[in-house]
Length: 302
Image (cartoon, rainbow, N blue to C red; front, side, top):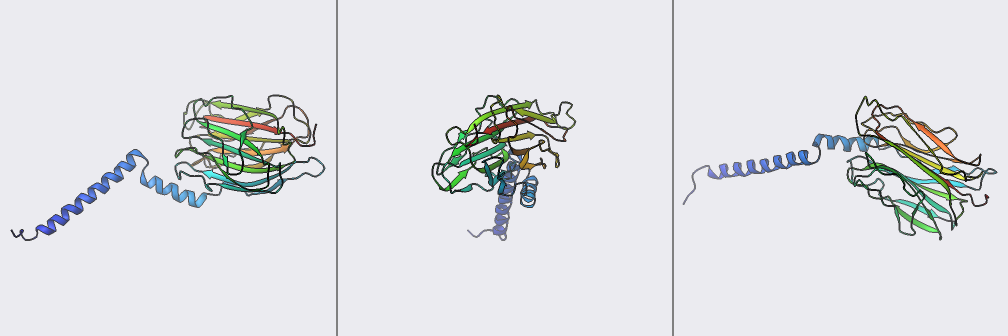
């Protein structure tokens, strides 16, 4: 039977309308179950344009006559909120030329799995935590992590930051330290946390500073102290996070819009005993902050 004139055109139109409807349903589903597409495109543009929060690698300390410690920032990775499921870069490389030098990782992030985050991995070694976690994740999965690996052999290492989920965000720094006691590298440590439920802008209880100190008074002159501070808030493009007095910066983020705010720093111990540091910032919606400090034993100190 010969189809009526024009029926093929109507059939094509119906197919096109059906395809358009399916596309619309897919778009609406993506918007409903994930994020508004315009926001996703904006995040991608923002990521490509402003992905400049990472510190520049390089030797940051070798105080001749003050300590045997040498410290080099080898690299850093960043994971922005929902822009990508991966760290950028996805791995950091370390060329260890002296056996028994230490690889130290500094991490701070919101873990989208809402659990205590696993340690980073190394294809040529294994990291151990520097600070046993004694505080919970009340109100938010924001957390700091400091880990160490004594490299028993020289050569290349490929270090991969831990997974923190698609909705996670944060920073990961890799350091190479020389002159640390390879048999007992951790001299002392401490951690602190402040948190309450998210309120938003104008929070009357907004956290504006946090302090941390070592648990004991074991630090000796010439030891290496490292501290990391992190915080989460509604959003703020310039939190003006401070550098603790007497400390040297390793990295920071003031633009807390698509990532958390943080400050990483270090110092060579000049006064034995308990070590402490305080970090402050400008914001009216901070609902969680965490601070961690570790003192690494210098190889030739007491």
